[in-house]
Image (cartoon, rainbow, N blue to C red):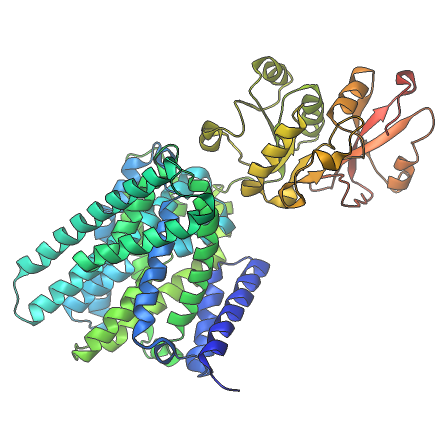
Amino acid sequence: MTNSPELMLASIGAIAMAAQWLAWKIRVPAILILLLSGIAVGPLAGWLNPDELFGPLLFPVVSLAVAVILFEGSLTLEFHQTRGLKRVVRRMVSGGLILAWAVAALAVHYFLDFPWDLAVLFGALTCVTGPTVIAPLLKTVKPVAPVAHALRWEGILIDPIGAILAVLSYDLMMALRTNETLGHALWSLGATSLTGLCFGLAGGWLLGMLLRRGWIPDSLLNLSVLASVFAVFALSNTVQSESGLLAVTVMGIWLANRPGIPVRDILEFKETLSQILLSALFILLAARVAPGQLLDLGWPALAVLACMLWIGRPLKVLYSTWGSRLSWRERALITWIAPRGIVAAAVSALFALRLESLDVPQSDRLLPMTFLVIIGTVILQSLTARPVARLLKVVEPDRVGFLIAGANPVARAIGQALHDQGVPVRLCDSDWYSLSKARMMGLPTYHGNPLSEHAQRNLDTNGLGRLLALSTRDDVNQLIMVRGRDEFGKNKVFSLPLSHDGDPAEKHALRPEYRGRTLFAPGLGYWKLSNLLMTGAQIKATRLSETFDFSQYQALNIPERDVVPLFAINPKGYAIPFTLDQDVQPQSGWMVIGLHVGVDTNQTVD
């Protein structure tokens, strides 16, 4: 088989897809499988050599990819998320960072005999977490909101700061080894920070203005944003080396916190692009590290890792959360979750090559030691973070409940039936009168438009993983489903059948790719269901058993009495809606919630 560049690039994509799928299947962060895959196809199999494949373009490609990943992550950093956590986050990326940096530098100096300047550089490289590993880990662990927000902000902000510290450490190292002054390194730090800040703010303001005024058509939105990110990164780096990462991070934060900018539209594309770049990057960089290099480090390397995890990280979190409202359980979980990511891998690979060419003592161990920290933290925390979060009882409830858009009589009746069976629900409506009735029934509510910006920031969806669009208007329901797909997924948004009398439903329906799933039974739209409830129909729960199975339940449909099954609840309390596209077969021990139409209503369901 020939190792043509086309075949190798295509194979990297196939390996990345397989690694992502396997990680999803076994519920571990994808970075772990990606790293192991890179080592397998690189030094073990000898098939992939990134330096030969890309040549001098390897690190420019890596740098641009990291810039896109940081920009995408910074677009999710909205200041309202740090409510009550601003001091914690500020300390984590300042004084707490210095504590972790110092512990890592001391450990690698005394256990692995790194020279002091190289030890300081290693500490700067590995004292930071990263969004590339924090984000997928948070999706798996699902901690409570304060923990998730603190870790996400730390990961995004600390990545460019860590890169700048690494650059400063490298500049200081080179200055001392070439008899230059310490002032040169300090000037470099100030120039790098100021340049990145200025270019980030300028790029964010300019792009935001163009987007807000509609000067960029929707068809060019993604291309324009991507080109802007590359331009800001490259221009900032041209003016001051290594300032580009800070620039794109500042640019993303600016856009995320300015009103009227379609950040959600940008994020949808950037998340997909970041996942592609992240997968390829980890495979490429891991392919440059041989397992023998990791094994040669020996037990002192494990001692360094232990010091970083169980001395450096606790000291950092203790300092950062002192006096905050976080409970000791939340602080403990923040302490436990600190995986290292792509910036440490990319920057360490770049500096290792430069230092080895200068014959700096122990520089050949910088890259494998950095990858050992990355692999060790990812393996340990991907396998233990979820159990630790459950043990500490700071994990978000399983998202088995329903967000119900609407508080009208139909929505209240369905919400009440689910709530009575222990299924979490929350009714959301702008009609205060309808919502007050729901509150009097003991149902959790949110007063406001579910499509509003306020709802995106303040609507509590803890424990709610699915959406029922039960508004009185079909067009509103369809709009809610379109927006709900972003948060809940296309298979977890539901609405009633369209209720247009005399017109084919297709005439008023959205295209299939924008629709959710249709509930219950054909023709049972909102007004039909509302009329049945008003004329005496009831929503009741029935327990199935060995002597009364689902077929017998369905047999209740006799001329004088109709039953329409609405939800099936399994013994674990998970409610499955009956839909037109899925055949649900409840078993013995399940609960079925159904609409019972009595004889006195003289009604049947079409």
